[in-house]
Length: 383
Image (cartoon, rainbow, N blue to C red; front, side, top):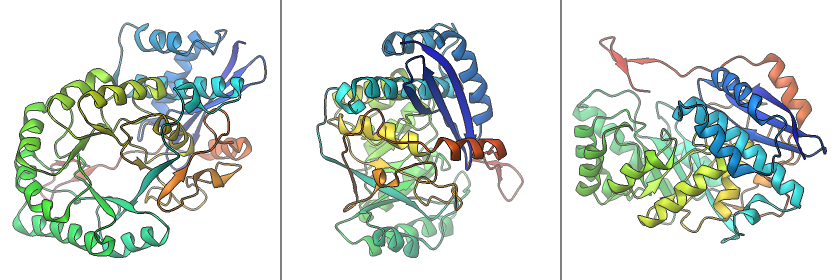
């Protein structure tokens, strides 16, 4: 079997799908979505296609090593996202070729269902109580929300109080048997996070996400971990096991690699195994499309240290006709049952893409750009 064609499709709201065809008629799909930079990643996929076309798609690890390292300059969000989409598609081909789900090729399932959570409140959170109630009504047992909109380096008491009020509103609706996760989104400085984390402890967050910006802030992260009993999560802006090692050494409780950013199924599987050695759990980042979620679930079913899985159904970025289920032939694959998605036995990634819908969407799509926020004084604000 040989790879004969690679295509990409930019579809609303902000996703990039990858299709890999073979000379034996087996097709693989993946998702290389990089929010705000899909058109750039599209070109990176095209560059990698120069290598992959003509190759045996079954040599997944060799292809991963070559595409990740063969360009001399390696890593980063764009190249790692292009690699991720292609890697997912190769695993999809492998599963279909052998007639088994990808999780079987990863060693077989370790669980029968995966707990999922949904988003509430939007980028600048409001009406949190009503939004949480709607997710509970939809059958979810866990939600995540942004802690705040744009905040200054040291937020005034009113902004701090508003963050706590939102957490209290969510906890009141959820009760003691459901969970809320709180995402700082890198918007809050390390000193502000140090003040806020102890104040959030009474609401028992499942985790607090990105209390500081990722990068070289490992010392600040370690101080926050040491200063609070709340589990700390991070990782959507980290792209390899080498990026994750120092944050695990800093003591984070939950790693959040994105299977469309961090080298795909192959690398996230390794990141999860690395996290297990630090007694940290996996909760992959996935506010993206159906292929990204399908890839996450394949890893989740085969990963012992899974905590929970993010999914984007009804997220504030998605418009009617541009949601998680709108590019699938069978939407039941992502049905929720008591807050979980149950394991299925369909081969490959386990989803059937509506290719006609994808091609129609690609024909009219425009690039999605990351919002640019400003503080009241006109200075740049973290989104």
